[in-house]
Amino acid sequence: MNKVFETLKVRGYINNYSHDEVIEKLNNECLTFYIGFDATADSLTLGHFVTIMAMMHMEKAGHKPIALLGGGTTMIGDPSGRNDMRQIMTKERIDHNAEKFREQISRFLDVENGHTVIENNANWLLDLNFVNFMREVGVHFGVNQMLALDAYKNRLEDGLTFFEMSYILMQAYDFLVLNRKYGASLQMGGSDQWSNILAGVNLIRKTEEKDAYALTFNLLTTADGIKMGKTAKGAIWLDREKTSPYDMFQYLRNVADADVKPFLKLLTFLDLDEIEKLTNVEGAEINKAKEVLAYEVVKMVHGKEDADASLSAARSLFAGNKDSENIPTTEYQKSDFENGKEIIALIRDLGFVKSNGEGRRLIQNGGISLNDEKVADFNKKVTLDDFKDDKLLVRKGKKTYHQIKLV
Image (cartoon, rainbow, N blue to C red; front, top):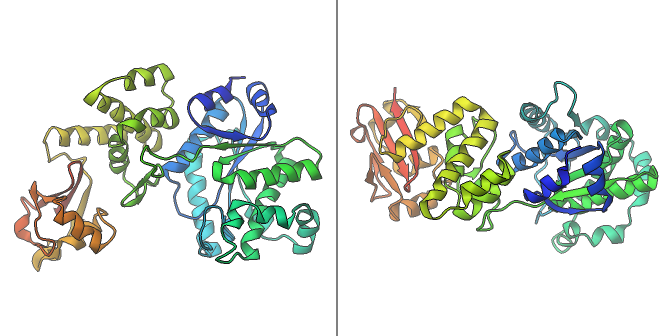
């Protein structure tokens, strides 16, 4: 077996683990483990991709991953880290999201040959008999212990429902079911899941009298403390329709210097010696490492063709060539601009800002340009006169471009 624990540790994944035996078992045995994905959106994010990378390291080392889709648990929603109750989603929406997750996960892990299993906890949670469930599972949970957990303690003043408190029981039961069905003995997840995962570990040890283990990953943030994969426009999605390959490339190409090395370790399979050479540089030379980071991630998520196109577009814009066919482009009808289109409405359409107020501030600070001319008035209307050969290049700041093409 590969020494996968050391691999995960040195690359910066590991936050905590429940028992010292985890290290020996990961390095010397073949473990079946699982990670859960609640289907709260219709795409995974770049933050999820870090978790998937850890699963790929585990799979390469000979361990057997289970990706558990939360078709059942998403009906309630995890209260961890929440100040209020999550919005209740319809079963149809949850099922749709879970299928999207299944498609995306299957691109990275070997589902086809059975090395990775994708399950859905809706298969056993939605038809549970409440009384039987409480007799088998609920009897092992002390209310006082649960209320001491941060996920619940922080909510007591504002109100905490039994509906939400049941989430930890359901996640623990997931671990029990996967242990019985597949022999899963390890659950992995973000550090915010520590209490939920330990609940499953303890449930298996009490009911099955078997060893079970927990291992959590660091919650990944940038050097500025911002959750990785978050921008002013929102999350960086793995779905190309929600975040284009070019936009993903640009996000990674523009990360802070301090983030390049840890991101290369977490988001690529590059050898650690190569990462050290790329990042042990001074000044503008770090931009080469940023380019490698962006290229490698886009290649894994979207394929070499999109990575090549994104790299070409980025280099073309850096060199001053604004006519690259790989620049993100949106087509509009000429009629959309015949009577003028408000600049703030336009940049909201393009995803540069999320609100009119944010748009006004951006323009007042000189952050929007049309064909390399800064927009000075946030009341400006964009008309056909602003176009050159039916094209208009909109730039946010110095590095974010979007081309509008009239059809």
